[in-house]
Length: 188
Length: 188
Image (cartoon, rainbow over all chains, first blue to last red; front, top):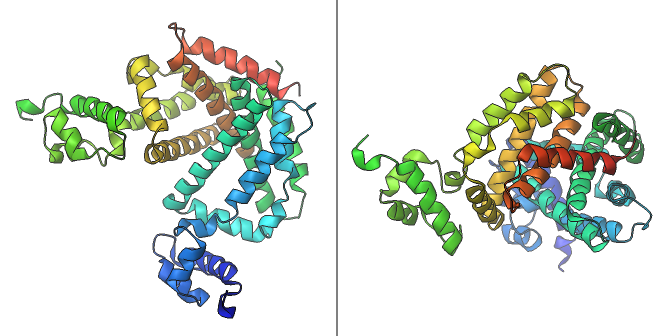
């Protein structure tokens, strides 16, 4: 790799975030992103399949880690606990500071094109969770419900975490959302 | 409206379903759909904004009815019951026979382009549910959780309903999925 390309991927990601925030995702071209990062447009496409992917470069690693978390969860856990456990075990700070994750989330929510990409990735991930639960012998309907509910609890907690004023642990927020869920669903 | 156009919308929808099933969504053009329905391509675009929309023509009516169902639900219901109530009140058979809904679902699941459209519509609908719950004075996190969980329960029940051998009532299946949910979440 020529020396001028060292750190290109990170620079492209930062340049993209800045431009998406300034002028919107739809109004930003990969040529502009590459320009701001000081590389060619061709280099952009060496790192990213298309424009949205510059914001989703961690999603394959995330997906694989979470599915592995479900596979390797203690067999004593209930299906919902298994999903919660996998989500809690992942090091969310490895995706960047809370501020950068908050900025990324705001950019995604502001663009239909990015939101679509995000939704399809979440959907694929949920299907993989269901598969991993089935492999553990969980009944199909229970696997679907536990995945749906588990992801719903997590995204509520994650959203609170990235927007929290103080630096509270995500696991703590998740616990509190799970307690809220129990009150919503009520006794069986 | 000239006489040859009477029933065009229905014919276009049926033609699209047939072609999507036979040769796939991506391999089917609006010209082919219009051709099979015996109308011009221009007529296709008078009824539908683009190719995917031919499968989503009921979604605005559905969205409006469900949001109205949340608004008008008895105030004694809990947030989750409110969502369940709105989904249970809707006449799902008005979207077509169970068989046609099962066929539609299979076509959507087989195409990334259609799945994306479906996910974005579900997401918008969920946001509208949250808004409607907020208007009823529900706390924001509880509104999000109740919407997420309520939709998750419903889609599990809906999927069982369209695939059931016998013609069981959707409301009955929903009740049973809600009971399963309670066992998954456990006592508060």
